[in-house]
View 1 (cartoon, rainbow, N blue to C red):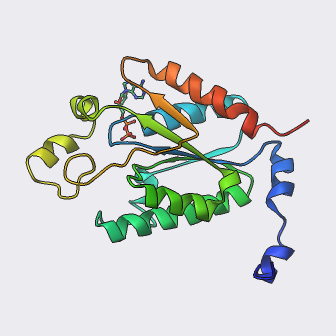
View 2 (cartoon, rainbow, N blue to C red):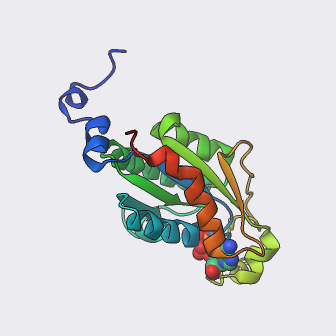
View 3 (cartoon, rainbow, N blue to C red):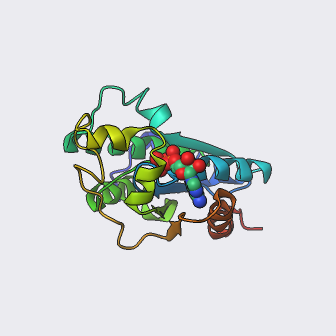
Amino acid sequence: MNDIHPVFEKMIGQHEKETFLNQKAKVIWFTGLSGSGKSTIALSLEKRLHEKDFFTQVLDGDNVRTGINNNLGFSEEDRTENIRRIAEISKLFVNCGIITLNSFVSPTNAIRKLAKEIIGKDNFIEIFVDTPIEICEQRDVKGLYKKAREGKIKDFTGITSPFEAPKNPDLTIKTENRTIENCVEEVFNFIVLKIKSKV
Ligand code: ADP
């Protein structure tokens, strides 16, 4: 391959940075309906990882849609651009050796495929937070389902916009009738060997 920009050959690479941080960088990509538990699990997992001396970064709607992506809405075109930018940012974090926890609805197979292609399949772990829509709607953490039912939000995933369940996620987490701690434990156990540097 001779299409690598010369600047990348001069930079200190991912491997050296992983060695420096004593870990393996991955993007842990949480997908699922609004209210399914993505952010709750990602944030709690980050604490757990931090306690174990892993170096992490969480990306979610709060720090991305209000910042770098604040010019994007929820049309299909904007959702794709939203994910494209998030994936490019995640790739930079991974190149820096950082374990990146991404919490985004990312509702379609095409969108998740795009993210995986940008980040690279070896760096990408897809976790489907599989909570039935009825439960998400009961939780209605941000009052968005109510608004969507009232027709006040257009293109709301699960109501007026589709959610395609991933076909082959690396892990599926069910949250119904389970504690947050229990779900976090399951994700932690699943990823820990993948992010530990080899000794
Ligand atoms: P999302 O990021 O997917 O939109 P949130 O994490 O913001 O969802 O909201 C999930 C809600 O569900 C929170 O209020 C959380 O306390 C609740 N919840 C109940 N049980 C669980 C569980 N087992 N895992 C994650 N969240 C849970």
